[in-house]
Image (tube, rainbow, N blue to C red; front, side, top):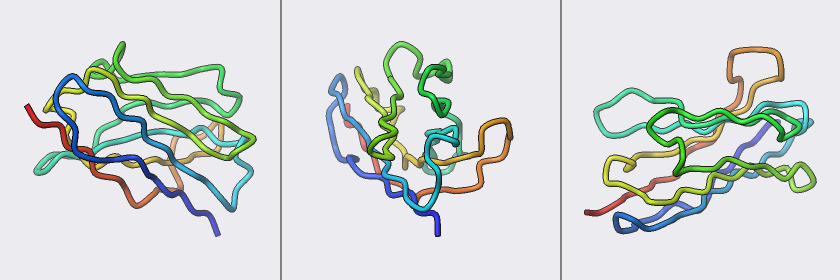
Length: 119
């Protein structure tokens, strides 16, 4: 079965950097657009970034554009989220998700990893 496993979360200070990883198994990784989402306490889950299967096209939410970078290594079935200049408002549980290229619904989700940014 498909599994997405996030790692790399933690507690950091404002201005620090953190790199999240999401290891995928049970799917043809390069055929999937991969996304990162986050959910802060008391708030709805929100889109952060996505990357197409080839890795050539990326898209970011306005709140993270210029600070976060999504990338992938199809040989390792892994997608990454490099987060720089972190702010307290970036505090959330971060989830990776997968959808077949050309569709709009993310079919598979990881369990999430906590990122906490202190001021």
